[in-house]
Length: 445
Image 1: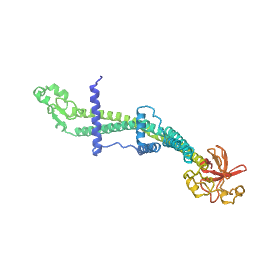
Image 2: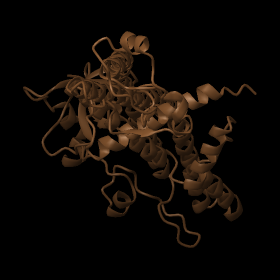
Image 3: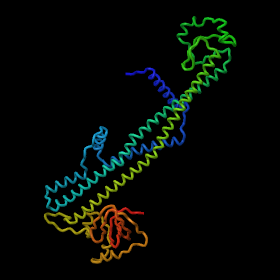
């Protein structure tokens, strides 16, 4: 083991100096280098981005997986770098139970037939949910996690380094200020006074060897050291701050002033080095903080992809439920004993059927007498203004003659009529016309 005692002592000294500087700043006893307003705004924006990203990530995970135990299990698998096992969705589990119930209760009975149809629809819904969760995890959750676990950790590391560089810079400024103050005080002391600072104490070694070290020097020695005249000798003195001066036999104004000059030069050199390191680290941190704008652009793209996958998921659910509704219209709507009464078609205005199915927009045919529906629909004229182009998102099979069949990616003209259900529009393609569901369309400007 390579144990460097000098490096350990140096690091401990630096840590202690930073701790003292930080404590004095908190108590208002030391000056603090303030960052410019633009830099502070970058820091605030970065912190806000990190906080909101964490909240959005956690809530999206709750949306995709409401079960907290399942989320904990997925988190552990991710940390262990293992593949998360496939989990059955609630829709697929419900479909399995319905299919087993139909098999046991009788698949040929009206109730059993309906259970089978609903189970098939729930199975499709569960598969659509699984695809949505997978797509959202890849396109939305993964980029957010990468930012928090990658880019943000780098930014936090550089910000801590900048904080340390700032503490070193302020400590260097304080040392230089004290050294200049001591130099100025030493300059104003008269020649006949002792020049030792008040924080000097008599060292123990000096007291032990006082008789040997304070012998009267010869005239040649005094004249060489002090050409301006005699100076009163003093004891060996050791400063409380060892960086100020070295222990010497006697202190006099010329030598003491030189020591303070050297201390000021040393403090100025340390300040220049600290200022250079601080400026370099501030520039690195600034570049990383300005990169938050690119992070916002990336998150915006991921958000669009998340909304697109969510729209696709809900459109698939709506389509599956419409198909289920059409299939249930061919089976009995009630089950009393062994009777199997016929159910009215979906286009019927029966209150029982209407309450049990999804709301359908009233067509023009509903307002016309029997036998005149097609004629009245063909005679509907588009308004003078308000028509728009729309792109078809999915294939749609017309349920009756009042609806218009659609093919994915084709363009049609759509408009609305007074009193129509807002979920439906009148669509035109060539000489064909009919009702179309809004959820199957992308309205173009």
